Length: 159
Image (cartoon, rainbow, N blue to C red; front, side, top):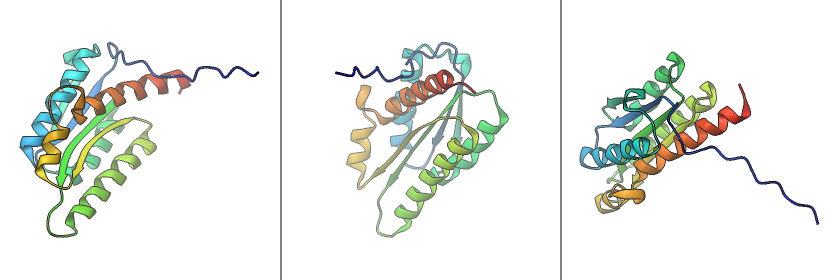
């Protein structure tokens, strides 16, 4: 029987990585918690404090334009995008979610810089608070680990 080789994976060690964290201020009670989770994950993975740049933007729609500028400026191996969009009474929710998601994907594909996507899209505040809690259930923590893993995996694949 043919033995399947182990798939290549990126390391979760970030001691030589430079990471930008872009965090939306809209729904700040939630996004502050996401930011805390992301910074905790980066620290636990060995990313040095001086190699982490944090940026604050007004809302989720503004994340991609800053991510694009940061990625094109060079000097980062990965970006972590954090925000919280909570459904309201209008279709504005759908537009914001789509613009932020599509924008981050476009930036990542256009620049080759991976983006750990930690944008919560929740039906209500309770869901957002649950997804921004303490520890590994925190989606900011998860997004930071994803960014580290992808940066290391892309290095394995070459320029």
